[in-house]
Length: 306
Ligand SMILES: *[C@@H]1O[C@H](CO)[C@@H](O)[C@H](O)[C@H]1NC(C)=O
Ligand SMILES: *[C@@H]1O[C@H](CO)[C@@H](O)[C@H](O)[C@H]1NC(C)=O
Ligand SMILES: *[C@@H]1O[C@H](CO)[C@@H](O)[C@H](O)[C@H]1NC(C)=O
Ligand SMILES: *[C@@H]1O[C@H](CO)[C@@H](O)[C@H](O)[C@H]1NC(C)=O
Ligand SMILES: *[C@@H]1O[C@H](CO)[C@@H](O)[C@H](O)[C@H]1NC(C)=O
Image 1 (cartoon, rainbow, N blue to C red):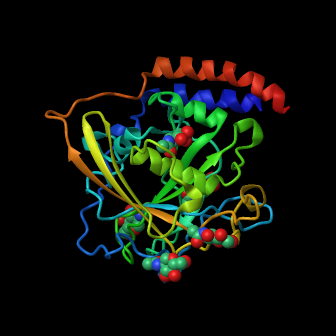
Image 2: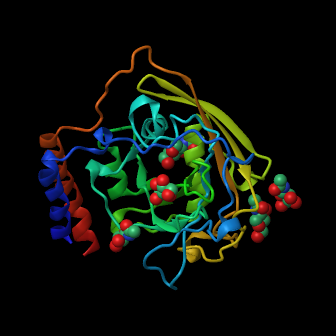
């Protein structure tokens, strides 16, 4: 197990000469002309599913709900998977979520079929609550648990909406194998939406209906985003059927998920006068140091779980 963590540090060194994701050419998500009125295509219409595929579950074949969607009517800049120009990763940062710890990808990929003709695809990325620290906070989430989500883009030729489908949940610490907290799909979704719409109080999860809406603004690196959220029913069922960790997630006799999906429409309402160039990714030497630091921090947890 500790060997595993040491191995995590190796890419910090070996990647020293490869470009990080922000310098790679962005995925060319073009502005779509045929986005349906909902802002996405229903994956179920063309053989897809609103549940992810988790590699190993007991019993086999369980999945996690795709319980939030960033609508294809969002600004095309927001739908671009990049941190520059107010892109998707900068939007995530505006409400406290960062890309994975030190660029390390931890854990098994989940897969999803969005019914867009591309078939079953691994997640594009895992994004984690950063505890107020855009650079290193997602490391803390990996170790201590917390809010996180995986996302996929619906851009195949059969359903090219450009919408993003998110599987959001709130997980327990690494030492507890990252299980999901009780009611952790609904709560993870609503805490994320609470942050993305700058709510001053918690969204009342048990009172939500398919008529609930929330709106608010967030900012990062000079970009301000307006997020309008509408909860919709009908795509996911209000039940525990097929839901991973359903036994521990369902509480007080309620099913593991309430069947609601938060559909987010995101607009950039202001931009910096001249695009600034904040580099949130620490330099290589700092990465290595932090990785060693993380090892020391995680050591007591490991001895606990051994
Ligand atoms: C998806 O991820 C798994 C590891 O989690 C990997 O074994 C598999 O090759 C990946 N599939 C694709 C198509 O990249
Ligand atoms: C889906 O297919 C389209 C068209 O072939 C391609 O441009 C796009 O990159 C694919 N998306 C993913 C997530 O693989
Ligand atoms: C924002 O997210 C954090 C971490 O998940 C959570 O503790 C907090 O309650 C959320 N805020 C709102 C308003 O939901
Ligand atoms: C909203 O939910 C109610 C009760 O579950 C249902 O009857 C109605 O059809 C739903 N409306 C929409 C627009 O999905
Ligand atoms: C889900 O079903 C439960 C009963 O199992 C019900 O109390 C609750 O109101 C339903 N929630 C939604 C959002 O429809």
